[in-house]
Amino acid sequence: MSSLNEIKDNDGARKKRMRVGRGIGSGKGKTGGRGVKGQTSRTGVAIKGFEGGQMPIHRRLPKRGFNNIFALDWNEVTLGRLQTAIDAGKVDASVTITEAVLVEAGVLRRVRDGVRVLGGGGELTSKVTLEVAHATKSAIEAIEKAGGTATLLASKSKAGKTAA
Image (tube, rainbow, N blue to C red):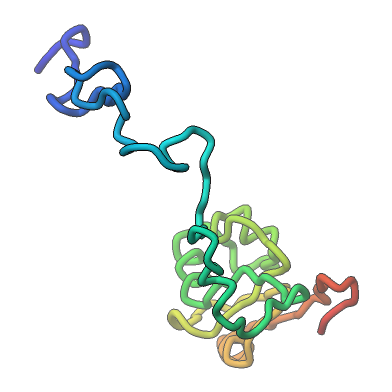
């Protein structure tokens, strides 16, 4: 066992960067790996998707579909993940499980537009009272089968109206 003053990196763990443009003997001198002449050999060039003046492919191809700006970004949690957290003692099944409780317990990192409970991922055996923004039909059935209840909150949509 070595002392603290003898600790060092493994050989090759820290590789020195290649210094370009430092003379012919360096192996990366003169053009510095940029080839010869032209726009891209100059500094300050960022031509991603540029095809030399030809109409770029992303403009030639037809566009499909659309991006729904009002779509809600649910943070999903499965019943199996919820049961695992209860078994591990992170979540207390006797109290009402809200979105804030799930974040505090480390089951979720953040709420986003609301928490959506999914029915898959395992079986729920604990009797729980859930208060979340959304739950699937299979999740609600599984919660009620275990003797618990699921209350759905009125979540705020991105349009400013409330969605059921």
